Structures are given as structure tokens and as C-alpha cells.
Image (cartoon, rainbow, N blue to C red; front, side, top):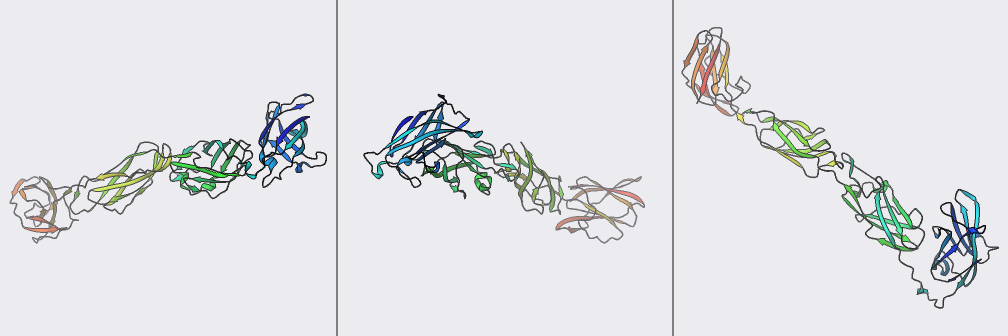
Length: 446
């Protein structure tokens, strides 16, 4: 029989040797321990015990010794425990085999003499504030303090959170815990799991739905709750991080598809592409100034814009895609500039059967660029036909080239002027074309 002595209201840890069949008993990881103290051991049920401790909650095994932690609340009472009177309690320690609940052994026993302190004021006992030697938050999906911000383009890489705490004092677990992420309080109330002093608070993924903490670069964690019947607040409970996508687009390149355009054309085609440096861009979103009928929005990094105003353009867009650390949108718009296409003034030409100057439109036959020493072919002209040439530039010399007959100089006098799509052109007319032969008109502009 082992005799123990304890003053009511004091904290004391007893180191009690464990024996079975006269030999030291080592519980190790195969046995759980239960400490029970009663005033009437022969008649009291275990549920009416004055003091009761269980493995890792007030009693822990240390080799062949049991360390029993008697707290002030065990003897002086609390909201859930009745205060004890001075006197003798009878106690024992039983070992129960974890894998065989029917294998129970009494490995220690004796008496506990409770003594009344001389000072018995209510303020004598001040419970210690809850203390934790370690608080570590981690993303459940990675078991690390960091994870990628995105799992797919524009898809947040969601994860639950596990907070590990190592208690420095007290016993039992944490209740009524509230969690704050970047000062935003989660809606849930949590309790810890695990065996004291190693406690865990798990926050399910659903409790983080829609919160910026799931993709913010840095997430400050705060934990508050109740431990050992006392409230606590850990203002700095660690930081979680969401690794942002590395830049995966270097530049936005664009150019007009045409080298030059006739003066009457206001729209053009622009080819463009994003230069991808890492990962894979899957979509881009952006604008083009001046506006275009085709939005800068597609599912490829290469594209074509049609009906674009023939002006200097500024393109600006954000790319969505997979990068080095997850996926998402570029945070800084990618821009590009396209210079306007040079404009040219073609020469228009046609054959008529009258000497009356014809009307002209941009649909008439024309040269593919501004004329300067070009040769125009009139097909199968007749002697009664009239050949016409409209050009914005003054003509220095004109030669009629007839197949098989040679080249003849023609006086380049302006017949009149004609307006085509708002531009004034000099009009030249010619007769005496060879019968049935293709006629070439060669001219030089001044």
C-alpha cells in the first residue's frame, strides 16, 4: 500500500511505481491506465469516484511509473466537480490492455490523505492561463504551410486547414475554438482532437468556401477558445501562404496582315500572339484601342482580328493559363502596339465605247499599289473604244504599246478630274486603239 498526501487546492504530481505479480510493470503502448480515488471503495461506483484520471488526461506512463497529476479543481471543486473534504481516500491504478478490454490488472494502490490548507480564501487559487509551446497551421491538402493558389485556370486550389498545438500546461482538450484568417472569422466553432498535450484543430474545406484566404498570398491565423476551463487567444498562430502563379507570358506581339492598303479601305486584319515563357496559356482576355468588332478574347495564344480600324493600335490583355506555381490570370496586363498600315492611291482604268468621261467607283479595275512607272494592259481594244486612266498623281509621259506595232508616245493632257471615294484624281482619255489586240499603256508619274 502506498500512502499519498495532498493539500486541498494544491497542484501535485505523484510518481507511483507500477507492479504486477511482484515485478515492475511497463505499460508502454499496450496498456491504458486509470487512476480512481474513492472515500468508500467497497460501496461506491466508479462513476461516483472523488478523483478519476485516464491515460494522457491526468495520468501518463513513464517506464514502470505512473505520473498522476492532481489539480486544484480535483480537490477544491469547479463548476462540474464537487469540492472534497479533508480525510482519507482509497485509490488504485488499473491497467487495461488496449487490444483486449477484458485483460485488466491492478498495478498500484494505497491511500490519499487530503489535508485542509490553513489559508482557504477563494482567491488563493488562480488557475494558470492556458499556454502552448507550439502552434503550427498547415494546409490539409499538402501538409505544409504553403500550397499553389490555383489548380487550373481560374480555379482556386481549395484546401482545408489543420492547426497543431502542443499544450504546456493543463490537461484535456480545446473547446469552443474560433478561427480567424486575415482577421475574417470562420463561421464554425471547433474542438480539438488528439491526446494531450498534442492537440489538433481541423477546419474542413467547406468552411473556407468563397474566402479570399484560399488564394491570398499570405494568410495570418488567429486561434481563440477554451482550454482547462479558461479562455485563451493566440493572436499570432502562424501564417499560411498561397504561392502565386509565376509570370508565364513575356509579351503580346501583333502586326497588320497587309503591307499596305488602298486609301478607301478603313478596316484591316491584325495577327497577334502571346509569347509564352513557361507553362501553357489557355485563354486571354483583353481590349484593343481603337475599338474593333472582334474582341481580344479566345482560347488560343494566337489569333486574328478582322475589321480593325487602319490606325495605330494599342492592345492590352490578361492571360489565363497554367504557370510554374499553379494557374490563374496575369496580374499585370500585357500590352502591344501596332503601327498603322501605309495607305496607297491606286490608278483606276477602264475602256468605254463613248468619249463621255465615265463614272468611277472603288470597285473599278485598279493597280495593286500607287502607280510609278507601271504598265497597264487593256484587253482586246477596238478602234472605236476609248481608254481612260484616273490617277491622283500627275503623269509625266505616256506610251501606247501595241503588240506587233511598237510603242507610240501620247500627249498626257488631263481631260478632267474625277472624285473617287472623296479623293480627286486626274483623268486621261485615249482613242485610236488597235483592232483586236491587247493594248498596254505605260506611263510615268511625276
